[in-house]
Amino acid sequence: MITADQVLAGRDALLAAAGHHPYARHALWRGHEPRGWRRDGTVGWLLPPEQGPAGGALGPPGPAVDVFAGLVTAGELRAGQWLHLPRTTREELAGRLTAARLDDWDFLWTTEPPPPQPEEERVVRLTEADHPALAELIEESFPATTSRPGDPRIVDWYGIRDGDRLVACGADRTRGDVGFLAGLTVAADRRGRGLGAALTAGMTRALSARYDHVALGVYTDNVGALRLYRRLGYTGSAARSSVHLG
Image 1: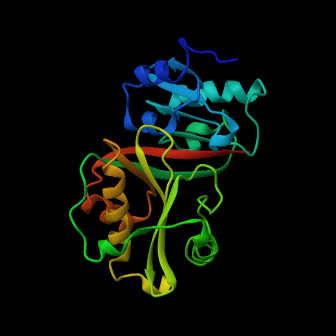
Image 2 (image 1 turned 45 degrees about the horizontal axis):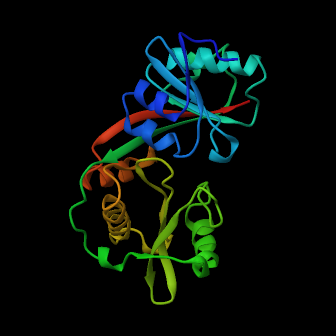
Image 3 (image 1 turned 120 degrees about the horizontal axis):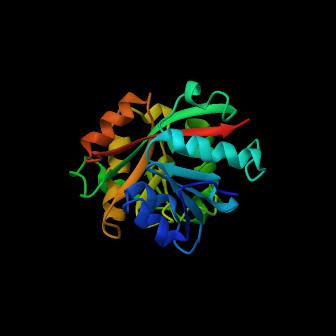
């Protein structure tokens, strides 16, 4: 049971309450009718299992932590699930939510196509026939990513080849109203040659043709990637924390 100032039912009600924030437009998938709430300036929601995270929120983190702690107590949330919350700390969670892991990241977005990048023309859309090469590249260069071939959240894969070898890849994981890039990686022996910039620019340009915002997530301590994305026009930002429930 959700205890809040206002219970919100359905995607449209949640988007309106969140002021159509780009993060809400991304996180609340088209065709889904999530349950949500508003409390002390924070808007939060619960999501269906197939989305991955169990819920999320925008606004001050305190009210979100309180509501989700109540849902844990009520048995609606359990260990092993995770939440995407406004930036929070272990101190703020203490005594309220048990976090097996806490990851800080930034949700970045742009509303313009990026400046052209060298070698951007090498970015191509991949097919199911490329899945073995994708799996090999991801396992070698980005094993921590949750974006993998066969993931139902993924709409398309893009990549850069060097001859027959796939040397860079990224996923279009758009399910809401905002184009979303995920799982961007470059082979370890090809880094430092501008392929990351080319891949990001090519994918951003492709999604900008279909969406008024394009977004991605990046760990806060990945300073090099943050610098690159800012240079490519990702100037909108929302500080996030992923709380993995223990």
